[in-house]
Length: 339
Image (cartoon, rainbow, N blue to C red; front, side, top):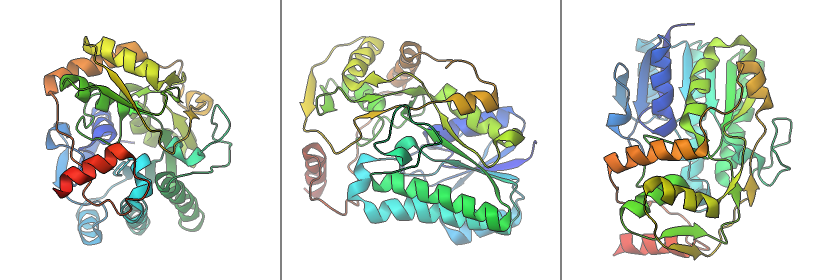
């Protein structure tokens, strides 16, 4: 199916890569992004770019009236899972209400497939490896909002026949990542700290594990999904198989960057200790074998890009709603903004 597709968040990290792969597949691509976390230069050449909020109903209605979209790749979100506890209203408005407005537009304008990028945050502290058959039990507002959208898509399919595909990626890294975001994407944070000659900061003892997933093992699968009939109506974990401790990750990032800096352990955050998933379903439906990009190779490629891009100054989030129990390092950022 080659057609016109909409990519929300297409100037951001995962979205820009999905847009690039959709273009390579021969689709006409329209990108909408408010540039709150993305960058204009991330939008791939050949895509039509619209600067705006994907949750702006009048803008979306105008866009859908002038363009016939056969598919939506919805990647626009503020994916700071830990911070979501302290920006609850913003989280639900940005990640849930915006999604529902796009689902409404998809239903009204007969979009054929709605591809939603969820997260393994929906699983919470579940058994490992996390499989799609598990009952989600999200523990933070970010995961709750993602799971709510998944449920809404199921309801929209039952009543209106809207086809959907849901992906649950995890700990994705690679080029185009926002190196200046101090709240999310630990690999980007580490690389940015190294380039600024700062110590690496780790929450807690660092033995918590994640399976860090290279963008090239995630974005191509998402982009392909609208051409895979067997994927319709299904949910897929997508990403790397092997968990790595944050302590080991820090050492690997320093090796990739060619520079050693001190490591500082900060007070632990309220977060899931271990999170990694099974990918048997996505491998079966999409005909995938093993993960293509090893962590060492992926870090080396991202390090080359980061050195070229250069360090970026981290900006504190301007709309923190609850300061109680905010991690001290984030409180410091907030205090610096108030001065």
